[in-house]
Amino acid sequence: MLSFADYRKHDALSLGELMKSKQVTPEELLNTALARAREVNPKINAIVLEHEDIARKQLKDGLPQGPLAGVPYLLKDLGVQLKGTVTTGSLSLYRETVAQADTTFVERCKKAGLVIFGKTHSPELGLSPSSESRMFGATRNPWNLEHIAGGSSGGAAAAVAAGIIPTAHATDGGGSIRIPASCCGLFGLKPTRARTPMGPKRGEGWGGASVGHVVSRSVRDSAALLDATHGPAPGDPYPAPPPARTFLDETKMAPGRLRIALWTKPAIPADVHPDALAAVHDAAKLCESLGHIVEEAAPSINGMDTMAAQGVVINANVAFTVDEAAEALGRKARAEDVERATWFRVENARKTDSSAYARAMNTLHALGRTVATFMENYDVILQPTCAAPPLKVGVLDMGRTDLGEMFKDMISFIPYTGIYNLTGQPSTNIPLHWNAAGVPIGTMFTARYGDEATLFRLAAQLEQARPWKDKYAPL
Image (cartoon, rainbow, N blue to C red; front, side, top):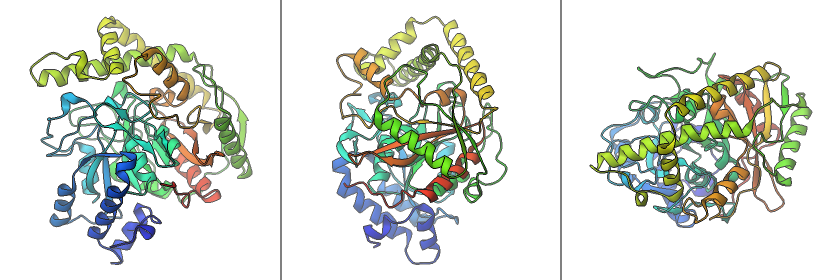
């Protein structure tokens, strides 16, 4: 079996190269991943559902050819279905609901040869930037176990940061790829709206705000995984603009001289921690040293109106999901079925006039036009990913008695990321900075709608200029 020390040095693509040259087998890689998971998962609580039997069957049935074939992989316990297994989203109403078929995204993962051996923790229905739930407990940050791993893809980020796997499935409806990537020192790209499929049972998530992809240690893994999973499926309501070439090819190309807008004051009022400001200004200097033009600039946005509109859309979707899950069990949803913060959203949705949804979508579409107009003069926007270092476990618990304080803490922590879910633009966390306490502090780079190419080129350049691959969490 490949030693963990050797295994951890590789990203997914280099593991694929080892298998292609017969230096290691898929079975050995799976065994190494499982051994590492058994060692560290009791400490970090990243993996909440185990599917070793399905992984063994994939290996027994034979894997397809491809650069990622045989790489161990974890799905998020939210947003996808794996045939014959339960996806809970940490919602008790889904505890016994077994998937009858794979979702399109999972079909594409299997076609790429990724070996799926479990699912990672998400807060209930992905509604918190920390993976804490009453069903599974709290996921902890491998860099400091007292702190959160982020959310909602916190389990995925913790698993990658702890060295269980080099990349893991994640989703992002308001920052849920970028936030945990920032907390755990990883690369995390939220693709353009509709870049990856949501079907076949759903056409979009949260009014088009949610999209699936991965967190990863390397930029090129993210590109390769997007090559494997992107593109519309039959019946999808709308597609993302088609790429000019493979995303992996983009990582091998120079970005050119980019014009970058440095935007540090959040549209939603929040105090920004000195560590977050230090990280983003350091990233700006690094970009300037690479020949890019960086200047302070920001579009004119009413952040409070935007947040209110976003809340209407999310609440409506949450209420629909909870009611649908309860109806499948032949009854009405009750407060005790869900977390306190989830029920708060359900009740608010039920009190809201139906026309408010159309009004909210109109507000969010106007936001998209405002930001797109601003970006006619810029290639990239540079901001902090989070407004502070990873918070202590418990601060963002969705069962907190004082929900008002919990929501206040949440908004103060993540005032930046949600805008680009609403505009549909590709946006990424790049791990360029660690604070004095040794905790990663991410920076967020956002490109024009449909332009993942620029982000992959810039990220690859920054990865080469300031490599992070040898920074390992101390767990």
